[in-house]
Length: 331
Ligand code: PMV
Image (cartoon, rainbow, N blue to C red; front, side, top):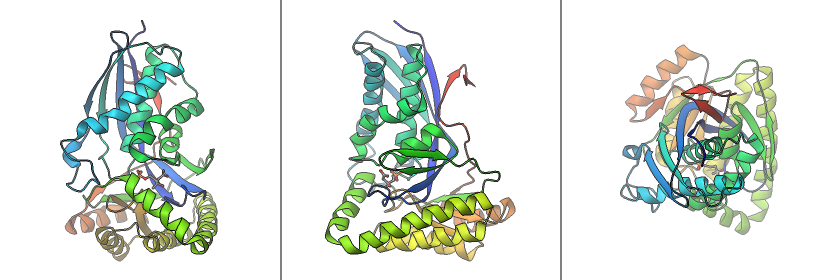
């Protein structure tokens, strides 16, 4: 019947290229040290039970159709993740009891849904004594991720699966950067949470209506992503900051920023950010600010808190999704 399986997956921030990645431009993303944990125990055949402690308390009132009381809808992708993982390992008729803990705020652009989905897939496979390749986990995650997101590009689950800093292009060129020095980022949550699906479909619609300007945007984002990769490799924060700022202008232009995001971006720059932008689908959620060093980040965090934001001192998760044995990584 199988044994208990346990896994952990990180959240993520998008450094360059959200939304444009859906339309084919390359994105740069980083896994962060906020995690989802999943435990999968064998249950009666055909029975998938989901118990989840996800930070619904962090849900705002404006979730684009997802209400605080609607947690069942948030749990459905996790049920689907278990079903798809069981089917993948050839146990279509299996039963699983899932226990999930997630420390990533929901609907904030930090990858809570990809991270929980990926953790469930790895834990369910472990429960059937199967260690999945990262590429397999990445592919299985599309089904459950599509439930809330519509047509995800795959960048979220790629970052949560592979860890570190990655570049991602549809359909599925994923490469890891492995920089010698990781830039210092501050993430700050507006507290306004929203659904990715509506924002993505609005941008896709706009891209059809405004073909020419989007063609230019996509070409530019490709250059920005390539430039960001070079800047990270060369440890050139000034250049990376400029590229993040330009990316923010493009995101404002396509209409996915929000006055609170703009306010936090402005405040971050006024308090020493080398560059700052929204991260994720926008419409609320978080900003990411590039800081000169950790001391400058602490000062900036205080300033952004005074502006009503919730700062997160994130660092890079280098490991990605991993099976666990009593809390210790299996590989
Ligand atoms: O759901 P979020 O906020 O992490 O955003 C996902 C990134 C998008 O580019 C907006 C959508 C996608 O599928 O790539």
